[in-house]
Length: 603
Image (cartoon, rainbow, N blue to C red; front, top):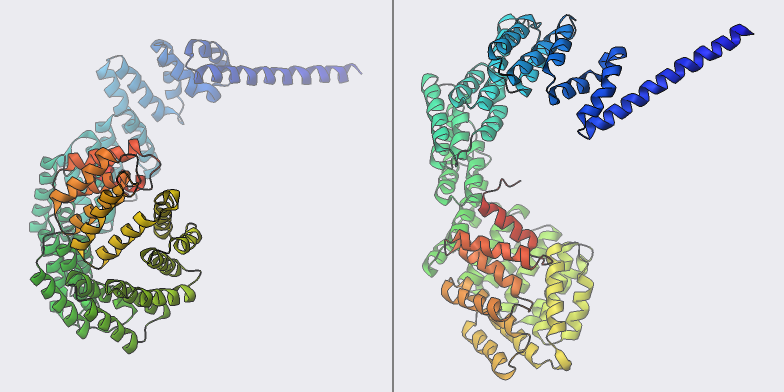
């Protein structure tokens, strides 16, 4: 019986002791996490005697924080005697000496750690990481050098050495190490490009950019047949937006490897996206010169060069003669390439040129009808062309013929975004005709469209109708609807006269800001920047409580960014949308534009 009681006493004593110990550790950790190192140390002192490995990390940090360097040194020296903790303890002791300005003693510890470390990759990497964490980069390099010389797996650590030299600010050393790596292991190309993009700020530090260019060029001259160096030079040229240089490299590689033009089509598309129109056209022309039988990108290049010219003409002042010439190029290309669903964009652009830019709507109508009759497009592409034809009917003032085409598409694609787009256009026909009640009923159904664009357009037109008919007087809105239709039909003089009548006959009406915005839009499309700015300022200064206030600020930003070459002014307008109109549908676009102009890295 006594033995049983003794056993219970022993059990409760042991359990109680463990419980007390756990509780002490929790209290110590709590004080430590709160930054109360003196209080935490009182508990860690006792705990370290019985369970050193459980509390070592926090205990050591407490000693350092409290500047009890002598105690910390004693602990580390004991850990150095243990084979499993020797190397880490040497690094920590070196760091401890560094904190006390004992540089020679610190260096000795770091050197001993490197001398003691096992040269296998896992141990070398672990030591390098520990040294890197305390920013002892020269010793990180020495660690990798030991692994390179004495490691049995032959791993050279070139990538790690290059990154470390970059962290040290040794750009020359970093670049040289990366280039050596690529000569030995070309498969690192993408990784090296990512690291260089992270470590070198091409725009902020042109000296570093030039250093990299010279280094790559020297390696390329010394190794003229090395494709990896040529690819790296191509990448560098793209980073610095030197597209002619990039094309030169891509062309040389394409010819040397007898490729099919893939590099050039990718570069051309990149140039087009960045508005480098000449370089884009040159790349497309190179692919076309290879011939239809030598490149699967022949037709893509044919279409790409048209896209390039169209985008260029849309961004500059272009004469009717130039538009006519581009229309001829489109017509010629369409006669040479297969007409399939994939050529829809080219067809749509061709129609835009002849129907809108050259204002030959009747010719555009015949062209679309011919394509619909002659070619076996998919139902969706046919529906898109019907919408294009309907839009042309609007220009010709054949609004009910347009409505019929929109209705066909809406009926066939009820649950599709395309059907929603057609439904909105039909609502717009009712708007032009002055049937606002019917238009409103269609718009209500579209507000929940899965297409954000259609939904936003529907909401905008719905709000316009609701807020423009005070006391059920529809006359001002009828006048405005007529003006919008006239603008669609390029009757700009008549449009301005119609809009002016609103202010004259109904002064102070809520539609006045809409009238000014329509005038600004027409002026913008006609590249009349002076009048465009005038109308926008009138909205901003005198109609800041109306619907078009945020739209006016957005257009003012775009006007300054793209046409008045005043990026600071553009940023001001984008920022005003963010601060003054946080609930605007334009906030996302304004934020992107503001960040782009500020120089932020865009995802």
